[in-house]
Length: 231
Image: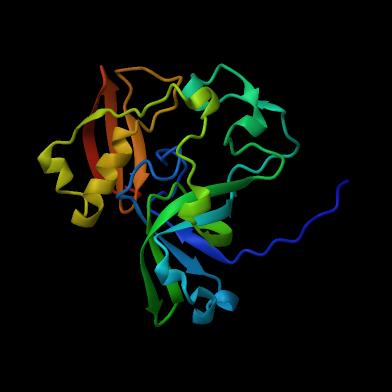
């Protein structure tokens, strides 16, 4: 069966990530990370969001728009397993799937009626590239969506991972005040590919209005440069 199912892009995500490098590997890992859902013109009817203000979290259904490939593989290599162990694609959240669709849980911080963009939703904890197409949003329902006793398969051994971030004050002051906590949270998650561990290598990551350069050695990420984006 190869029938195509039509999908409409209803919104886009505006986030601090112009490139894939550095995006948290799952939603909710960096709770302070702020993004905004902006609806497409035909979906900017405030009535479509009526009642949403009573919910604290959303499910966002979106497209891995920069990871679309021809064909698919039944197995992938999850980064948290070192990038060498293969698992079934349907046992992972890899972007390289038959349908490049992502699912993220985010927290609603505010719903605003913008005079130019119509209703916009300010959220935290998203793991989406800037301008990611969104197919749908649905309210998170605690009574049915939360499963405290759920099993996590091969991820059950993962209990969180954070680097110590050494961010010299003179460099931190080059980052807009409103973005500092989010940036430090993203860096603490270790943006590097899991298979890279070169303490001499200088990495670069774009975040909002700045480009950040850093090294990682012995569990410490050290920021060595902050420049305006695009410099």
